[in-house]
Image (cartoon, rainbow, N blue to C red):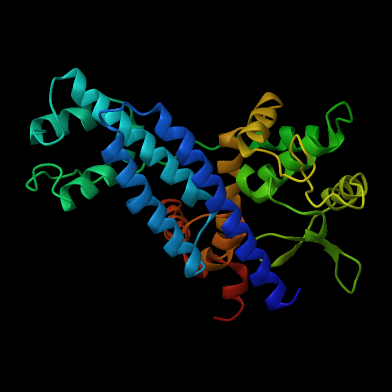
Length: 307
């Protein structure tokens, strides 16, 4: 695949992500309390949307970017509703209110920190407010025997849908997020000079292990000549909704713990800078997780051979 083709496809995907975010924004704002809508709309359009557009311009927009922005917007709205319940306005929000918001609720509330920081910067609340620093908690991976059993089922259970089996293996073997799996195209599957099956993950073809290679080829063969997406949605011209795909996979046992287990396995085998773009993760996150797992650069076989 040429660099020009790769860049063109990346630009197309970026535009598609931004279009989806804009469509979601219109719908989301209708759900926001009318009293809060002006502040939330400013935050979404001039804070989150501008950040996403900037990332697209410099080529750093990732699948998690738009999803994270949506979650931040929802948490911002929930924060303002929570203040209403305490009979406190955003302008009158005190440090004690802010501390209570973060301390008394679920961990997802930390996503509202972006809104609070933005509000402070734009003088919508007391500029002396301080947002706590959050330390992410490492998710629990699926036990190795359970993961092996799940992979075996995905490979051998012909009663399952082929597209679910393929998607499940991309999660359990390559730690792929459903946002990326859903955007795979038929022409992302290719063969190298040795006829080995390759799959384009993040702009770089990766040789696929057997028997997933044959399963991918079989799935692609089921798509008609005018179908672009490997996992089409309700209409063939659109990819499947990542949430829909995730729900289908959860029903057959492919959950977040399975992906975390695959991620940990890959971190032990592949250097972070190489791994991050392939699995759709932030490189800094991969580096932090490698440190948590006590994986040093010198542990990688390819590097050991050079020392």
